[in-house]
Length: 139
Image (cartoon, rainbow, N blue to C red; front, side):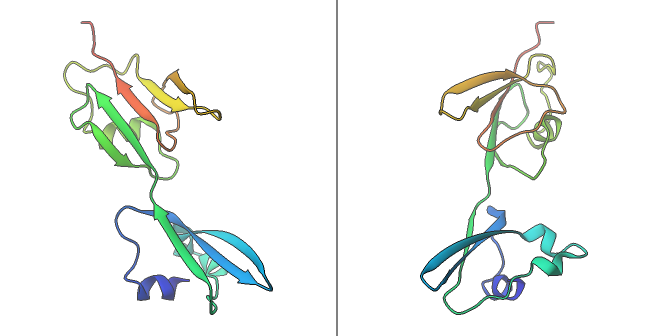
């Protein structure tokens, strides 16, 4: 797997940290998700799959999250593994002078696709396609 990725020039900046190996044998298709970051950690060699003729390696785009409101750099950002709200705020450049940590909201779609508004704490996890809103301080 690592050799094939290297021959392809590596994963581009907005590529996901997980790749999918699609393999068809005897008419049956299987899908194996492989954590690329774990491949390069000690012991990761065990998940370095041998690529065979007909295999397809799919590298999806990295999941994104969005941040707006009273932050220095609102916009869309790459979602890193195990990212917390405080880490997301730091990618947005931190709070503006008018921003407040109290009242941070996360807009997140539920399983049915309906948008939910959640009260967020700094340690809360950020999920794919979350929209983080930082309110203005009243004082």
